[in-house]
Amino acid sequence: MIVLESVTRVLAFVGKEFVETTRRPWAVLSLVIGPLALLLAFGAGYSGFRRPLNAILVVPPGSGLPTDAGAYQASSIPGLNLMGVVPDVGPAEAQIHDGTADVLVIAPGDLQQSFKAGQQSVIRIEYSIIDPIRLGDAQLLAREVANVANRKLIEAAVSQGQAAVPPGGPGKDIPPQILAAPTRAETVNLAPTDPNVVSFFGIAAIVLILQHLAVTLFALSLVRERVQGRFEIFRVAPVRTIEVLLGKGLAYFAMTAVVSLVTMLVFVRVIGVPDLAPGPTVAYVVTLVIAASLALGALVAALSDGERQVVQLSLFLLLASVFFGGFILSVDEFHPAAQVISYLLPVTHGIQLLQNAMLRGEAQPGWEIDALGMMFLGFSLLSWRLVRRTIARA
Image 1: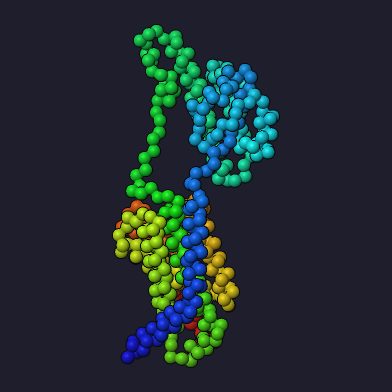
Image 2: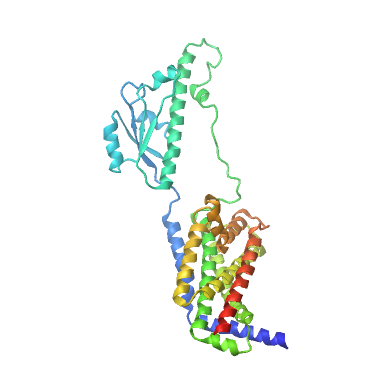
């Protein structure tokens, strides 16, 4: 009898949340359609390729290097657009400062003489870049420019050496280009899929939407009960705190699960996101992500004094999830202290699990499953204690 009464009270809260949500359908749709529309606009507008850096090559007189830009086109470096070859540094640096050029490659004036004398020369690379990502590109391209210059010098030295070798001598028939660079790299991607930008970030967006939806709706609903004075009723009514949280949690779990199913079908069937994972694996991961997010939403509600603070904390969690959850930057790129923030967010583990499952076909989830389970238990226990204390004081 006691169990049936408890189940009845829980189902009463489930029905109450369904009724209140159906009265405000746009509140739920805005939380789903908004991020999806932004993602589609991002995927349609992003080409996936960075603009090549515009470079100017400075070849001082007497360096022995060609001054014709066409002589360097055959050795063009991907990501570097050669605008021209000039003899003086001054005018070229002026183009760097006014933004016309991005990179300035200055060849030493005694390049060949230093090489013949057994001395190392310095190719100076100048740039004026404040973007840290583009700065890394410029530094990588600078090393590639040095490699190309070294190869050119070796080819010239080999050609001169071969001229002195009699016909049939060792290395006579080997082209200088092969002697200067006997190997070349070819990349092979062993991943089972090659997703585009929308496919890769779309999976992360699904997890982000699920967490934000679960946290915001659950927290707002629980705080609204307190603001409207219903906690006073709960305190004298034959209802326990666990029944309140469980009833609301089941209702919003069902709603979020429906949203996740519809969103996943749109991404896979309409947009064409790869899905190599078995259905039960994806369902298991999504279930844990929603459960952990609902528990986090209950904790947000317990720490908030009103709906305005719930919105603020929800947006704070959304920003934290975007920056630290692996949505844009990989978690392993952060310092260990910052990774603690990442691993306390359900979205971090959900993104990793779903991407590996759908894009790699990994049917056996990793330790992130245990992390989501611990989050659910930890957040649930903490929020239960805080909400029970609040109801007792009401």
